[in-house]
Image (cartoon, rainbow, N blue to C red; front, side):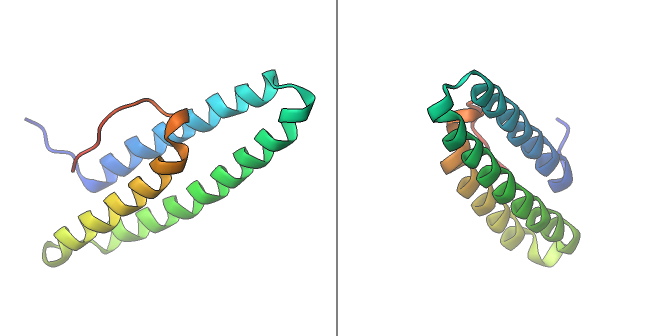
Length: 98
């Protein structure tokens, strides 16, 4: 079985988040005038949160060594969970394990 690197896993998760943002963007287009402003603000909030998470994830991946693999794994999972908790309803429902 092929083992994925943290970079591959992070890239896959970022792709899921980007798809979620696209779905949310489509919801904004279809929303009523009253809901458009609220949903647009939510999209920008998610986009900002995801951008910050991507930066942290890239840094963690770059700093990962044999000696800190488990600690890095925990930090990556925490970031994934924090985004998925708020953003999950706009993503594919795929369980995640490292």
